[in-house]
Length: 146
Image 1 (tube, rainbow, N blue to C red):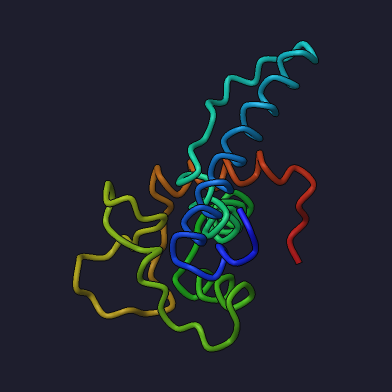
Image 2 (image 1 turned 135 degrees about the vertical axis):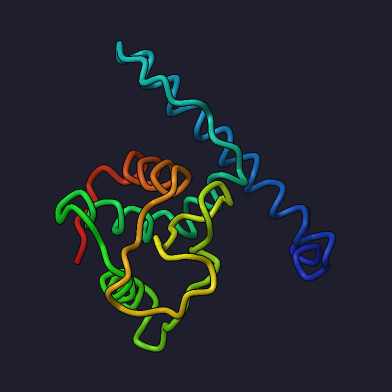
């Protein structure tokens, strides 16, 4: 593959494919190293799609999960503060992170659908949010939040 290929859509597709393949192989290598060291961590190999999702939203999920673990609960105002730390002061709504239970979203509000947003509303993690947070933590064992 020459340098000229990377400027074409086909060249970009090939780069993405190679990166996906490398991510899968890295996961397999990490599992093998763990097994050879005498510990079977039981983690399954993550697909490149899962790794990309964890890379994109894992830290925000982890910070929410850790906040709830440390404080017992979280409000929408607390959530907004975390999202602003990560994404900047202009963040107002991160709708793709919120949804209803079972929707694949990371978080949900405990209020009925359509209720106006207020900073004092409770935010909870979904099962998917907890899963992503824990996977991100496992991939970043030395992480210390700001």
